[in-house]
Length: 437
Image 1 (cartoon, rainbow, N blue to C red):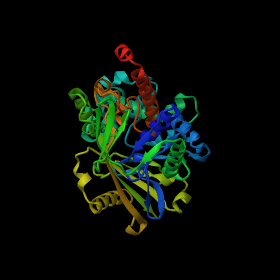
Image 2 (image 1 turned 90 degrees about the vertical axis):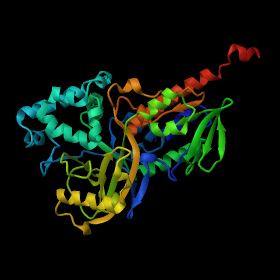
Image 3 (image 1 turned 135 degrees about the vertical axis):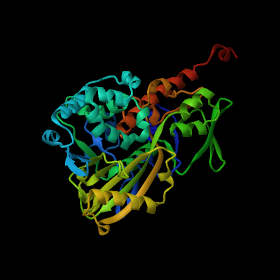
Image 4 (image 1 turned 30 degrees about the horizontal axis):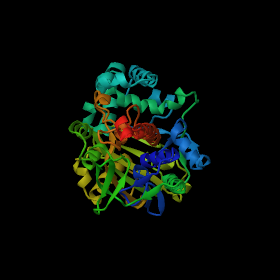
């Protein structure tokens, strides 16, 4: 979605654009696949009413009227039990916390939702900030287990800006004056979005090449040369690298040493995500947050609590994500090992689940998904304009004041396009020596 949105905005500004995608299909983290007899998103996604950038793009693709909206429920699995966490009454009844703890937790969320600028929070360790507002018991019972699920031991490196960005997204609708937040999806899922996107780009004159992995990008004689895995090369005036920061460092070896260091030092989380097609629902909750250390996955996303089951032939679609660092051994585990481990954990949460209930099970793996907002993150962020003329960078690491989601990705692409166009215009203005020559 980052590369496609960049291509759309650059083309609309009059540029001639070619997009190269390493995978055989388009979409990246927003790509779709076949699970049993169902085609749906490879990873779980949701659109919020407040996702104005994404909704504008969907409008340009002719899909604005294809959005379905609903109010979902949230669950919490803690101390071996599943609790509803969907309403104010659920919150007041939540057993793991006493009344004072609940008041402090609510105050933390309210306070974070009202902060407009998260930059000062980058200087504060996340646990220090949470303990200040929520208290040690709430941190130990709720926040720390959730942070471990999302960030593992890397939560100790994270700043308070991470939790602020998470809360800020969920409260975006209320800040913009909407009465409540609604969750939505495009009928047909991201398969339909990506198909409409690529069709529009082709119609607008953008050249698209899938299954074209890039090996190297270099600046030569005022041009940018791209070398592909098959050894072939192409020349362009400019190139934008949208691969994850460590991958970009390897793709562009001519970068200055300090640029490479900044890229290589971005701390990423990857994901191993299982998609399950079940005969029946597990719960009424779209998201079930998990705080138990023994669970092999980060949470349970029951997509059918959001998406009408008729999209899945009456079946239930469930995602079991596990966020891990790029060097985690789970990336090398076989599908059979992951299946056994994840299903065992799911059955401990839902003992009535049987093998016959599982109609399909597939695993998606990505080593670089989102960058961890570490202390003083903005001060160490690799710039999008590099020291190489005509070579630019734009990836999820450049999402500073938000969390990784499609709306933030679209917003990043649009900001980057504006920056690149201004830089390209400056580069096209001849210097005095060139003019006299």
